[in-house]
Amino acid sequence: MLTKHIEYLCGAKLWDNETVYSDHPEFTQCFQMTFLIWGPCLILWVVAPLWFYMLTRQKTNILKISWLFIVKNISIFGLICVEIFRLVVALMNSKDPIYILTPAFLIMTYILAIAITHFEKIRGLRSSTLMFIFWCLLTFANLITARSKFLSFYFKSNNNDHNDTLAFILFYVLVWINLIFSLFSEKVKVPVSETGEKLKVLPENYVSLLSRLSFWWINDLILTGYKRDLTKDDLWSVDETEASENVTKKFETAWNKASEK
Image (cartoon, rainbow, N blue to C red):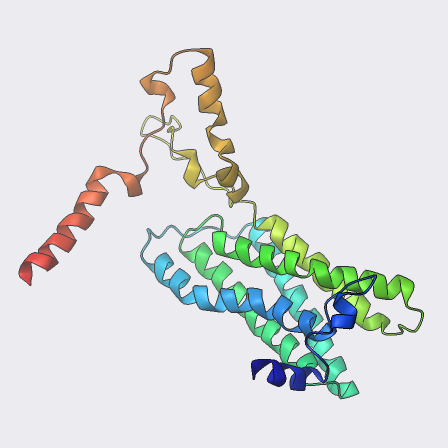
């Protein structure tokens, strides 16, 4: 039943065995315009409310506007412009509904991505795991579409829709830019003691997402331990969110609520 509705929106088949099992197999245009784009967007929309709720419960430390933050917003705004162009072209040429619905859905998703990026800055989140996953899914899902566009552009002489090809190239480049910049972390000042000395804070909460995924931030400590025995001065101070005082306060709050009941 769902397949019939999608095929009605596309004005074409969702699955074509002749295309999939040919010498140059590829998914149909309908499949590329729906599942490969809707999938990552739906995941973001489903997880976003939980993400906003989680951010409201963590310690607030507003970050300053940085070049990384500006570049992220400009690239997402560029994606919105690309989808507006696709939407206008579809309306002018009276294309099938899917060519109107998908760009409109992407525009709303990009606006959500901007809202998440701004709220993360307000809540002091230096690198976003959610946005990295979203851009990663959107990038690798559209590798299939990129391959189809490449084959269509070079091997099909009757392909005259150059505007659509250029729009996709711009879209894909901007998605890759967002994916790359989502790996970087916002820079923050290292806390300083009363004497003016830099504190040895736990770097895990300050490094980029790529460094956290690869545990690169702990390499210096491992190398130091390889060269000599570690001392107390080599270790980092416990983060405030992980300190026993902070955890105890949360436990006491929950315990008092439970005991009153």
